[in-house]
Image (cartoon, rainbow, N blue to C red; front, side):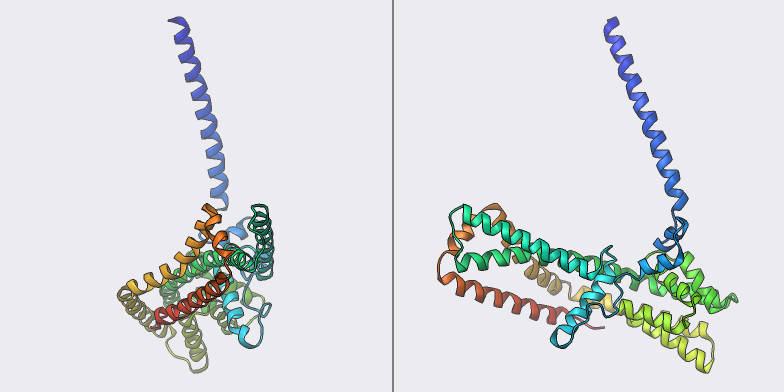
Length: 333
């Protein structure tokens, strides 16, 4: 009985010690987090002691600036890729992303070819075509799908925040603040991503850039029509005068009404859009998943000479279907 009591007391002591240590560590981590916690990323970076030039450079990272712009038929996709990369706010540049996907593609393809050769399926044209498609799905399609999802989520967040930012801007103007002070208020009151974006505008104006040009650059970075209307309103008021607060209040009301209409259209087209997403994503996941689970199922079929024609036709039908689905579900409001 005495031994049992001693064991219980020892276990309780160990538990109490571990609990107290955990509480002390958690409290220290929380206090350190609270020390630098701010409403948006820009203010957090400034609170940690970073210079404003460095903060602005990091927040403008991957902004469309011509780094990856191409000519001809590739100009549109290259520009869309840069806008998507900026909206996703990833910590690497477009060149680094493309290089990483190229390296991943090469590594996965070499490993797949070695695996096919070691298992006795050979390196026929059908096997090479199949492995190229599998490798492209893993190294290119899946990362791009993740990047697009992240960028879309942040764009929607900006669209939701912008009318609220206009309301704060209007209240600041009506309380007597100048435009520069109203923008500075947005940098302190708004969360990411819109708060940091207006912070970049405030820093660029402080460095000597014209306010209209800085706001136009922000609208171009996000490719947002609401921001462009905001810039036009400021430019017109600057040239002709007028009550800017009333103009922006009306603009915020128009943006909200358009957002309501857009949500109604999305609700009515939800079934078609979901079908399009499933028909686009499901074949890729099915192909990759089935190959990883049972590669022999595809490799045995790929050895048949007719596989080359059939698989090539299948890829053409898939990409053609994806194109038409995108056209049908790309609704403009």
